Image (tube, rainbow, N blue to C red):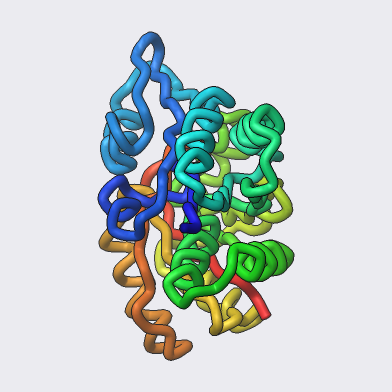
Length: 278
């Protein structure tokens, strides 16, 4: 059997992982002295509630090599093949932990993919692998298609506030203040393992329009799903879904709440799209 493993930065819930028959390796979230297993001891929605109220800025810790090795060995002993589709190594040590675990076990039945991306875009790659497994594709066929897709991953998020980019040191307090006065919403892209500030949108009504225009400018490959992400802003995400359906005839768009590692910088109220471009 092909075992598919990902991490909680894919934004899937524990329940969704069970439904897809995949393993979800948990990163840790720390607020001061309090530590939680992402997804298992704290949902993504609960994270944003605590982000707003906590005096401590959160930090996250990667999945360690021991946990990967234990999981890999369990499946190797059962005679299974393993495909791990993981958060970009540029932003987390999680992939490196899996790489170390594979080296320790020295097995060619372990296949690792660095998605070069995060969040809902990582999630759509995992979902594609799950669908291919259900179709009876070999692990080599799945690995080849997912690896090729990483060359065209797209993730764009329009933030509700500049406050959390300021807290993370990505913009200065002066820029955050002026942007807030002008009603500016920053647009963040994750590409090739980098988080980039690519634009600023003025006014709440322009946020979804920017994302829709980006999908027109850089169309999606319809052989892959388009995912919508949000940071505890389900109403905004549902509105974006309806507008995408009307403007681009996109339908059945999965909606996911974005996890802590990316969400720490985005802050609550963000909407995002993740897809594979043509």
